[in-house]
Amino acid sequence: MSPFHKKILLIGPSGQVGWELLRCLQPLGQVIVAGRNNQIDLDLAQVDSIRPVIREIKPDLIINAAAYTAVDKAETEAQLAYQINGTAPGILAEESLRLKNTILIHYSTDYVFDGQHSQPYTELDPVKPIGVYGASKLAGEQAIQAVGGCYFILRTAWVYGLRGKNFLLTMQRLAQEREELKVVNDQIGAPTWSRLIAEATACLSAQLFSPFIQDIEEFIGIYHLTCGGQTSWYEFAKMIIEPAEKQPRLLPITTAEYPTPAKRPAYSVLANEKLANTFGIALPAWDKALKICLMR
Image (cartoon, rainbow, N blue to C red):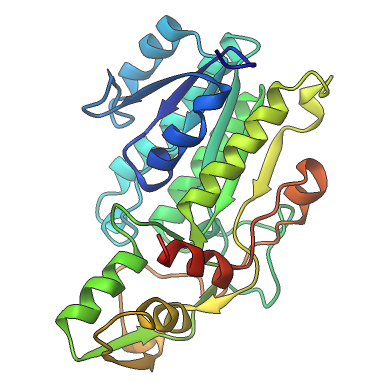
């Protein structure tokens, strides 16, 4: 039996981060999974289905790892993106507050910023999304904050892992299929392994359950959670295909040479000092994390 004996509702257990969370959260208590085609059927696009699930389970902790993440598709599916990323988190916050002692952990993104900075964004920097995806995620942040209660919003970025759809797996596949790869070299960020996000979330959760925290409301708010350092998509790709048996030619290109329906922030590195100073949680540099991931 877990020393914490807590009931944890994990929403979106089949995604990159959710899949890792399901394994990392087990020591903290009873993990109940909810999502489409899961143990408990919950679709954030169907907002009327959210309240009954939470009221029946009465969790001590809600972790929302579900999101609409199709950045380009969001430009033509704005209503759906806003339902999942904007409206649903607000309902989760309302139900969390209704249960009084329930904690809500929700993930957000670097895309809430416009990318015009030249130094890492802090939690206090002004937000200004430049696409529907970022705007919908910002709407979710604002909905949670408007409700109040005991919430923790973790902004992360450039998430990759060994399952699902992500840049790492795409590059590995294309390296086997093509002789030449063109990759954008003028967008800068911090690639972050989904397993590290999950481990950090479990560590945070354990501390929030700890009796050493007397007044949890002092700590609520937004925190940045990414690997350290920064790189471009091109350099990220270069390191991904380096161990591959088949080595395609890798060519750096500009964002203008690779037009997409949605604009991307040119610079979206996040400063992680707040999380480190408050909870002692800090992820390794992006390149070290990637090397470990590639050895799995």
